Image (cartoon, rainbow, N blue to C red; front, side):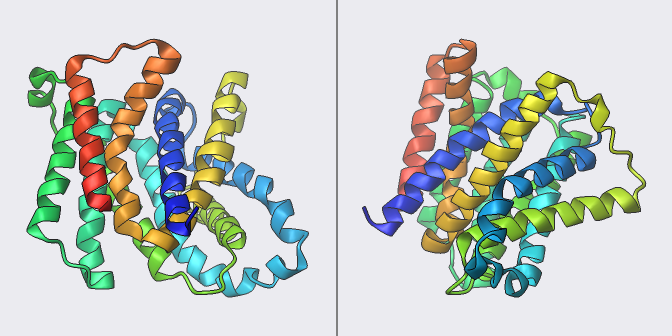
Length: 291
């Protein structure tokens, strides 16, 4: 199996793991402050990976050289999660799922400036088709839901999250150097995220409130920390280095479809013909962008 194929399979797996995090995150929104919640999330993920890095002499040598670069990468990663959880306090997963479809297009636009990769008319058309497909999935093929969609406070906050996610992907590729150890890169990204969260917590005098978390909430948090953070950061960053941010972000169009499929599998929510049509359009758009 080639490295490129492995990279695509990694992103596909990460897409489903992130889809699960959308469902879980909505259950945690509002329980404690999003900065405090994400600080705990990053700390758990960091501790999970720490033994694999700190107990290896060769890996420890990469920590200091990677620190400043991963601090920049983790800034945008941390900003995404802060804005994401804050937005969910004012809006629905439906609205955030809609706006998340802008990530591939914004990433492609940023690639023009960072990597001199222009967007052809054909690519632009495919991006728009992908957005249409995801809108069909998100609004369940109901035009009335689409017409009632509006940009409120939560949606505006999530737009900041969308730009942060695009910049995170760009920085991962732009700041990568040959010879970087991927596990150390991921570990330092998580450490950087923890530092940014901790700094924000101190600056804004935000209480931890971790005692407000129930056993069920802690289980949800463990999924977000270990599965949706630890594993997906590794999968996304390793894949981005191989196939680039534009192709990695192309899989975003499969996110609403992945959420719909997971809801069907685990919560028994049926898929309408309209949703299935939207999933098909998303899949075709993703495939064409990857080609």
